[in-house]
Length: 407
Image 1 (cartoon, rainbow, N blue to C red):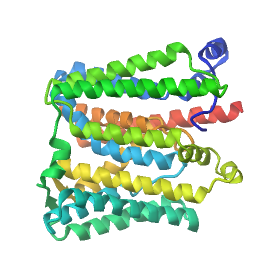
Image 2 (cartoon, rainbow, N blue to C red; image 1 turned 135 degrees about the vertical axis):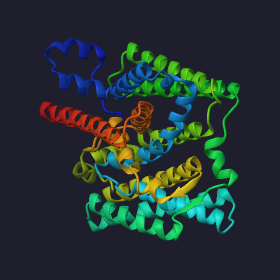
Image 3 (cartoon, rainbow, N blue to C red; image 1 turned 45 degrees about the vertical axis):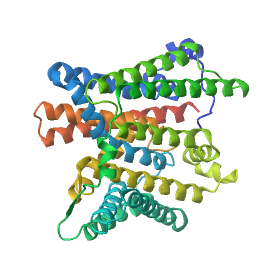
Image 4 (cartoon, rainbow, N blue to C red; image 1 turned 30 degrees about the horizontal axis):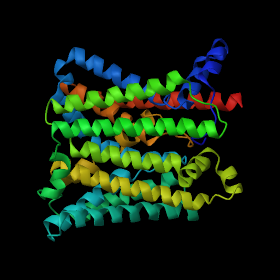
């Protein structure tokens, strides 16, 4: 399903509402412009309300600041994983790729004495090569992505241990790398950034509506269009107010939003993005209209490698060190995949948004943060996260099956 696919208007949805079951209503809502955000936002609000009542410190500006920072690594990798999920593929090596990139960057900076920015660029380039290599095996050899990336996960874990050496960890003191997660903006800059975000979001939403009108496609209702703009504007200013109440808007948050906005534009407003959704929706039909499915897969896995490498650099900055357990040995991979799926990206391909991955990361991060404040055990955190992930996949499968039955 491509982003520009015509959808039912709100009036048509209301007229047909009495004859629509729960799954049909869910499918229609998720296909609208802002509908995909609704389920994950409701889950996020429910988690915040619950922990806000049971653990009042949860809603403090300081805790929200820490929550955003903790979710950044997962969110960065989840944005990349979303790209391959749109194709109906999976990448089980993303966390290990992040670990290799972080370890390489740490060695270049600490042991070789290379300048921080140059080391980061090299690490990102290596991440792209790692992802592209796996994409080539999947696209041209025909090995399933699950098998290739599972093997990649094991191999990259070993490579990370080789790079780290006998100590198994490297402390990160480089000011450039550490500054990625420690630099914050003055309050007035935060308000300016929020205003820029709101104006940009409004422009994109109105431009999309104008393009649909010019193409003769069904339009979103005024209530849906302007309601979404107002809601996300209030959300942006509320986030800035909260962060300014503690230390200010972090540079990392701005970088993550910028990267996500760029990938969102690539996946929704470029020929590459339209082909990505076409291949994910129906590979055979995409092939028949002249789209190179193999090249799309290679490019998608290259993008995942790039985002994983960036996530590794962010993690090294956040943790002030690089260790095996922080990346490949922990739950980072499952949390990143879970964030993408919880955010509404379909495991069957052809439907999803990189923005949703950020919201999904906040859901997982909020749940873990709240359970930590409640004194819950690691076992409880894993069980709750697994239950939410299973629910998200079940909802996706239910809406997908109903969609297929209605055609």
